[in-house]
Amino acid sequence: VQLQASGGGLVQAGGSLRLSCAASGGTFSSYAIGWFRQAPGKEREFVAAISRSGGSTYFGDSVKGRFTISRDNAKNTGFLQMNSLKPEDTAVYYCAADSGIYYSGSMYHRPSIYGYWGQGTLVTVSS
Image (cartoon, rainbow, N blue to C red; front, side, top):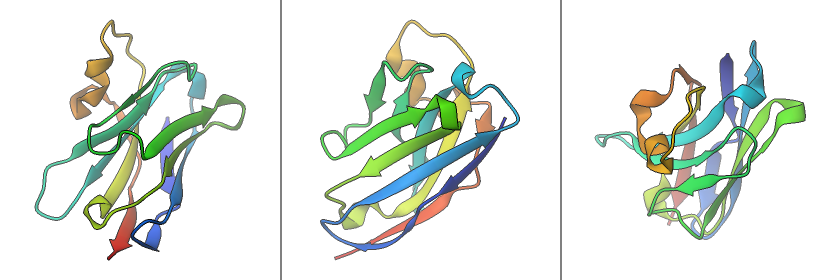
C-alpha cells in the first residue's frame, strides 16, 4: 500500500489543522493506521493510531485530549484532527500502515511494526 500524507502548514498556537493520509494500492481496511511525528534533532514520536475498523484509537500522552484520529474506509483515507496546537507540536508528521494483529494497543506505539510509510507533511505552529 502507498500512503500520501497532506494537510500540513503554518498555524498559530491554539489553532487547528487536519491531516489526511490517502492510501492506494491495497485494501485500506486491512491496515491499522498510525501517525508519528519527528521534530529536528528528536526521535520519531508516536502521535495516534486507529484500528482497521476504526473502533479502537490510541494516543500519545502529549496529544491526548487535543488530537483525534479517524478513518473513512470507503474513501481509503485516514485523518488526524489537531486542535489547540502548541509550538511544541511543530514537526514533520508521517502516517503509517500496519497489517498485523495485536492483543495490546501499546504495540501501535512502536514505529517498527509499521511496514508502510508516507512521505511526511510539515506542521509548523507559531507562538
